[in-house]
Length: 260
Image 1 (cartoon, rainbow, N blue to C red):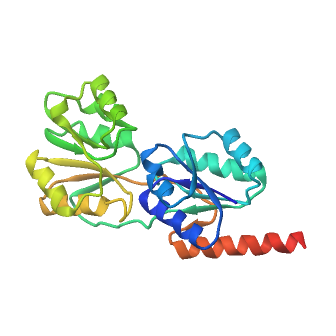
Image 2: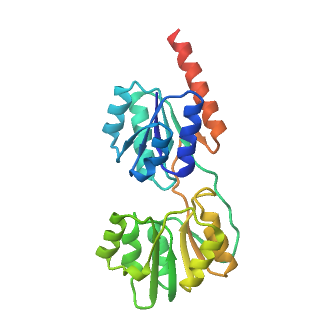
Image 3: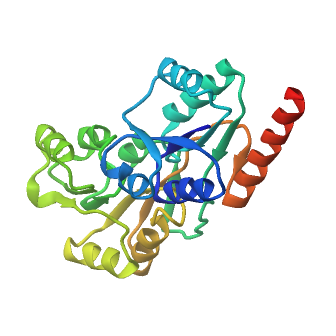
């Protein structure tokens, strides 16, 4: 049995892939909507954030033999917790992360953190398209809700996000509540519709549509502030389904040797 952290659409595809190879797993997701594809493929899942103790208890209860962490590239705490839980239980940890997309353009400025991005953008005058989600929305609201800036926030269409926007003073006319993925043409249309003069986004990778957002912005000559992925020291980092299955097979063979 595998404890599987599923944080992205390709991560859920990997869960289906592993199940198809005969692996048993329990996937963890943060929201019910994220669990839909797992449920459709009859994969056991848990909804809600887990502490280290929660993960350890789950691992011990189901006698799990490995942790596969396919959480979102920016879910630092989830990854740290998973690594700690695996270490505490003495089982292997595998990290799956989609490959990075590399863009080279004088219009792109890379920064290390959300706050760095917000601080840099506060000197801008015009319309800023924020596509980093709702989790760190308060950081940007603190810096960018100014008379000289129109902050357009694109996020998932759920009640919690709308309530957060209302609490922070973000007006409804400045909210784009939509479920992706977004094509390049749709990204361009949104930028043109709102007369965007700066985009803030994350370095998520191809499946996460960061390429379509950036490509659209660059074609329209819109500057981009790109927040780089967190720099965590992952054990057993994989960027393909094949590498994950290769490592899993190796761990299982090694475990079998010790049990003989």
